[in-house]
Length: 241
Image 1 (tube, one colour):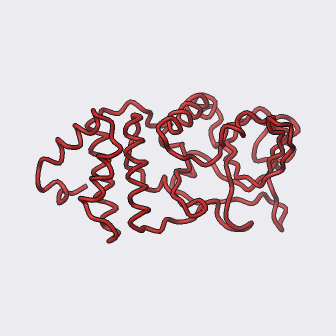
Image 2 (cartoon, one colour):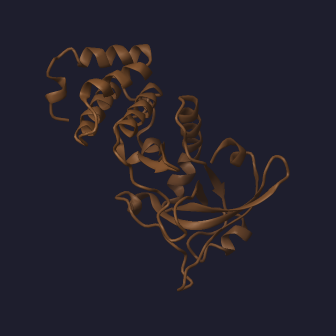
């Protein structure tokens, strides 16, 4: 979550049950079978100022706890990298369940397990996320954030990484970026930005030139040189991505 959530004192995390007394699951996503499932939950915590809060949240229960434990530091590093790069992440943090927490997980996780607690929005029964409206402004923001991801060493191509939060584009899930890491060669990252541009142009709301201009505006010098080198070919926009 945001920094104030990360500094908060967590009192309890538990899952919300539905009419059948089963936890409410936000299923979906082709990677669910690998990473785990996301449920509706409640988070009780005390903020830095001593104020107690009780919030609706989304809770990811990882399928492979060994993997989650081995990559917990990478999640924290990715959050730090993204914020440093100027990417507006939704609120999220990693949390290890206490005995009290686990009692409210209805067998979906046990004490000592790591879960990821994330900002929840939308209706009580709806999805944690809303789909993108591919307007010219949305496309520009996607390319801005993709270029900033590439600046930080990460892949820039993951279009499904972006969703709408309160009418604004935000990246929401770090799992794939933790898997692939932040040490991709600059040429690969530059090509990823261009591939993303070509993909978004298919929405019919943007041109190659305007999105390329947006990418170059945010690219750091080394990445900018790579992008310019790849676009010297006048047919770069026509090449299959």
